Image 1 (tube, rainbow, N blue to C red):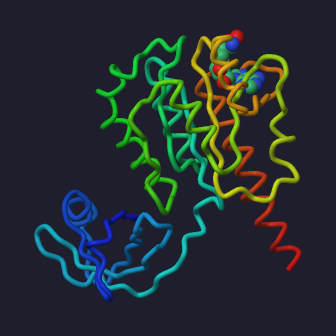
Image 2: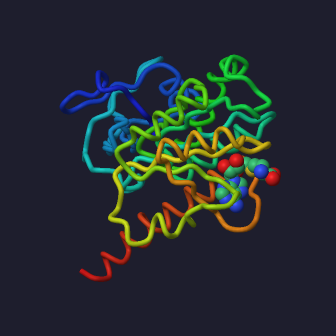
Image 3: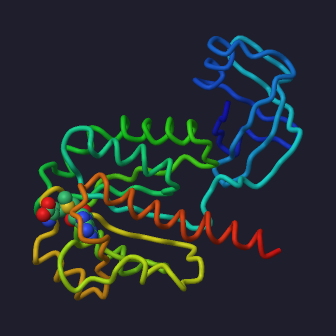
Amino acid sequence: MRIFVPDEKIGTEHITIDGGDAFHLIRSLRIRRGEEIVICDMRRREFICEAERITSDTVVARIKEIRDSENEPPYHAVAYIALSKGDRFELAIQKSVELGVAEIVPFESERTLVSAADAEKKQARRRKIAQEAAKQCGRAIIPTVRDPVLFPDVVSELKASSGLRFLCYEGDGVVPLPKLLVGQASPSVVAFAVGPEGGFSAREIDMAREAGIPLCGLGKRILRCETAPLYVLVALAYEFELMRRNLSCELL
Ligand code: SAM
């Protein structure tokens, strides 16, 4: 089982697990002394521990080994995803976490059918989805689901971003995704935006262009708003995680 703990629970030799995680370990998994637990500190480090003391509501684990996680991509991916109706947005969260996203920023734009205010009510549920997906797939961090913003905020954040940044657009005058990725040194930050079911308005595309944000094409097919971010994250993982990491291994 993989557990995420805040720094204050991590000592030099022991880590204290309490709250819901302790409850799950003790009551559901019936953990025994000596059993191994992998604990993550949300900063890409993994603590290989063994349960040493178990009370009714806490588990004190002894640290056996500390290692940098290999489960995180070498870049910090920020996905600005337009708010969508129903469980589409939640599907996008779950799958984006599995595909290595670090931050998800919901946003309202001219054609979203859900407002940022309405979306606020679903934040707790969305953060839980991100946490469960991170535990299930073995992430070393729990990706952040930020509070919803408005499209102009997306433009200013993309403009200010230090790394690779682009806005996905299915219209004309775009740069194909491979051209943005291939030949690039592995970026430390990748920030990208995907529009809603109704797409970005002409005014929003002009705003992005005026801000100097590259418009990126994902091919000729029109992808659903929950598919497009996954397409980008798969491409990033393939290019900068699988290819670069494995190629460098073979070349060693
Ligand atoms: N205009 C689309 C249509 O005709 O159905 C609606 C937008 S699409 C469902 C949702 C978003 O996914 C778009 O705003 C864009 O950000 C992204 N997207 C979908 N297909 C794409 C493609 N082929 N190239 C680049 N972005 C794409």
